[in-house]
Image 1 (spheres, rainbow, N blue to C red):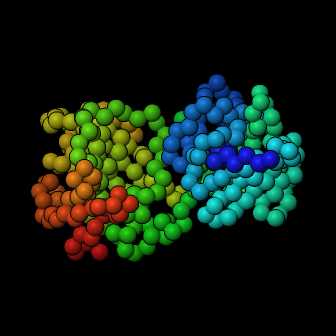
Image 2 (image 1 turned 90 degrees about the horizontal axis):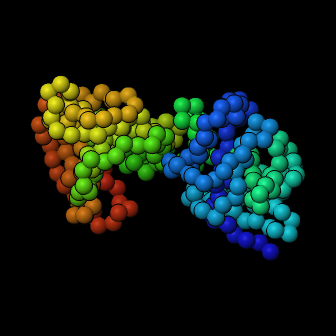
Image 3 (image 1 turned 60 degrees about the vertical axis):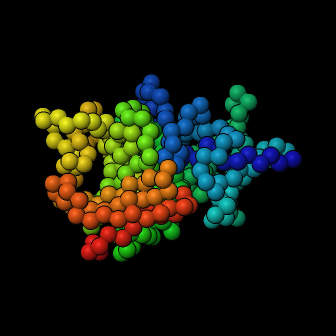
Length: 302
């Protein structure tokens, strides 16, 4: 009898034969990041330089589904969007990617009452992007949305920005604490004429993301506060000096576009500011559906 298990954290495949998993030679905790979210309580294990994780009942990546056949001890993982399928059986090195039979180095096992599956096989079979961050000892996995990335790479800067905001956001550090109460909404900042990086500010916390490998990766974060004569503004007269930061501070100079997502008011206010922080263009649009785009065309930009 089959149990439909909703997506697992079975996904996490690391090129462990290449990096030889740093955690295997250190006592550092092995961290997991799925689709931009840090996942805890998964208890990954390492066997012959391969990382395995238990099947879980938590849907971690959109469009993935896992079936467990208790009679045959077989795990079937399906991507409902692409229809890609992988199958593997506990204790067997024979597995399937679609109809193709393959041999895997480390089979699934049962340990402490949990069924463990190999990261690499699942990830490669379902075309997920897998990465390893040595600084945080983190295995990272996410699905790359080809349609969104096609828009990101396209020539329409407005479509590209909207697509970028919908990609997984990969955050690997523990994060700084917001220093303000929740407000009407957050604000996105893009350099004038650019589409592959942005700053997002909400509750006194600024986060800088850059496009990499089909996702938006956070490379800087800071608590922003009142003016400080000894510390330059991140964006003159717009994002004031920082109180604490992580990562490499971005250089945001020249004209800047802003898009203030006022979700409590069902509205987006947007415009352009010059090098001094003075507004040179501003407008607003109603937003009645939260799935709608929040980035709009800026005059004379493209």
